[in-house]
Length: 191
Image (cartoon, rainbow, N blue to C red):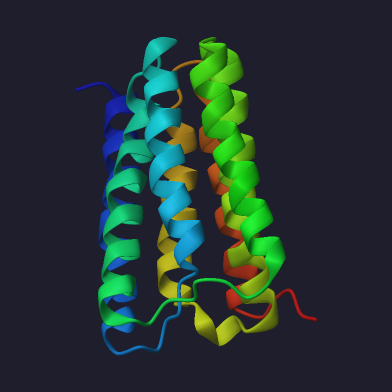
C-alpha cells in the first residue's frame, strides 16, 4: 500500500474516532451542534468527494467520504436527541441558502473544477453558523472532536497525490476550517 493511501486512511480514522466523543456529548446533551451546518456538510462533502473523484483524485478524497458519513450521523443523532441548534438568526438560513446555491451551481455547471470551488464555498457557508455559534458559546462544542478533525485534516494533507487544485483544495480548506473551530472551542480565539 502506498504512503498516500495510508495517510488517507489515517485521516478517515481520525474523523470516525473523533466523532465518538461528539456523539456521546450529543447523547448527554452537552454538545449542541448546529443542525443546518451538519446537514449541509453531509450534502456538500458528498458532492465534493464526487467532484474530486471525477478529476482523478484518489486517497485524499477518503477524508471527504468519512466526513460525509459522520456529518449525517451527527445531524440525525442530534435531531433524535433534540440537542442540536436549528437556527439562531435569519443569517443561518441565508447562509444555508447560499450553501444550497452551491449545490445548484454544481449540478447546473457540470464542470468538475468549478464544482469543487462551489463545494468549498457552500461548505464554508454551511459552516459559518457553527463558527458563529462556537464564537458565542465555546462550551457548545466538544473540543476533542475538533482536535481529531484537525488531525484528520493534517493527515489528509499528506494524502494529497499532487498539489493540483483538484486534489489539494478541499483537504486544505477542511484543515483551515477545523483549526478555526478548534481555536474557538478551546477559547484560544476569544470575543
